[in-house]
Image 1 (cartoon, rainbow, N blue to C red):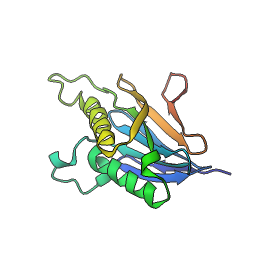
Image 2: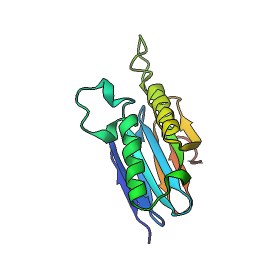
Image 3: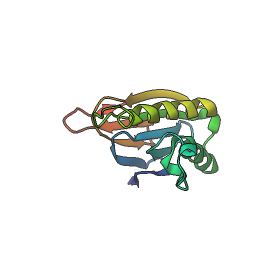
Image 4: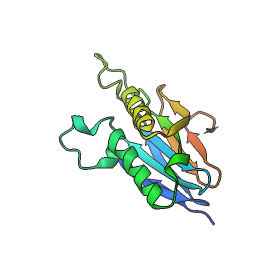
Length: 160
């Protein structure tokens, strides 16, 4: 019997096959799934903001793309994953609200770009993404297969 491990907003966790890991309600946030296909260890981070260096109150490392992805990799390697085999899939980064001036409206884009930049810096290949547009997503990483399920209200299930 497999378990579904929940990750909250500005949170991260890891799991191993046959378990799965999920996070709910990604709007402008990004759900970053990392996976080692050999050990079947997966990890998921629900990041809210692109860059911890731009915020004073930045003690929660899971909240930011730059620190959250790094921490997720550390935890997965400690659990037995091989950093060189990790692959990434991302979802979220929606533009949830139209705002004049556009600064807040583009936080989803900034989150997606910051996530991709950090993955590149760490040498982790991004193999699939479902980002942007204007709707929220709930995601599940299934560690037995590496499939990333993306669920959105009024849309068919997407598996990347």
